[in-house]
Length: 381
Image (cartoon, rainbow, N blue to C red; front, side, top):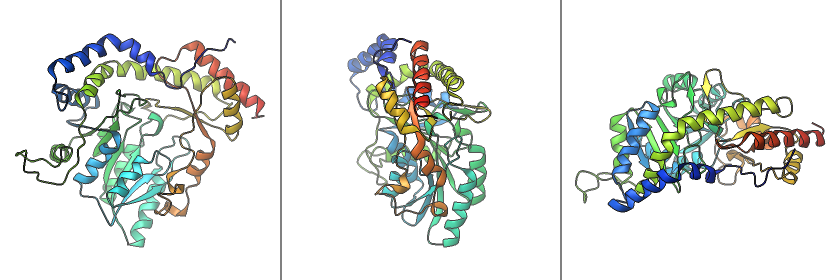
């Protein structure tokens, strides 16, 4: 098989070429009206995102990290409070908890979906309650690699324990379970528009979605320095977390094709699963779930050898995440459910991700599959 040239791990250029005329026109429109901060495209994007996710309130903001920060601020979560989150994720999930002065409590993940394990969450909540030093306040579930978490189970736990349920959908906005978005169950859904996300802009950006109008109004105040009705009378201590108008204009055009791109991503994922089953452990999708496939992540005990061979064959691969949060310097002193997270620690040593984007050609994907098979054979898998 002929080696394709310059295989992209995430091909942002291909999408840009596809949408170039519309994005150029959208940018030109903003440049013409000159309302670069909180221009009309902001409200339009928020309305479109609400319709897409079947939620009533969208508050756009500056990035995905601020998107998680805003509801924690609005809920008044801080010192003495426990917020439960998976360790197998990017640092931002726990970072915002710690920055609020609250305590992240790390929970293990399901070995098949890589998302927070509801059963381990239950035992971890019971552990924290029994210790009696922290007050449980919220759960942050991460829709890792694009697949929606088990929100029906998480909602039941949140309700029984009196906890807020926050969906960190930075990778999973658009993922559904039995046709329903995360907001069907979560109190708040947060997302990131970082360029590499399934729905990404050309800079930083994020959003918070909820059906709680009062909460949304508080977050709208918080994102603009805690503003009140009077510009010079701030009614709460806030932050500067606005999404800029140019990014909103770009996202409006990308949102139009996003449903089509999710379908394409799933076709690519299906081809990967068919070609690589039995070679590496391919990701499992829950019954009734549709993933956005932010990454296509596989598992192998021979990861390092396979990745070295793929590099020689000019196939890019990336590890998400090589060191879980509970083992990182900044977070290793925080509580860990049961004292250890065996699934998280095993996955951190064995996962690697293959190229995934809606514009991945069939011939390129077949080469990637063939290369992984060859690398696995060489590693005696």
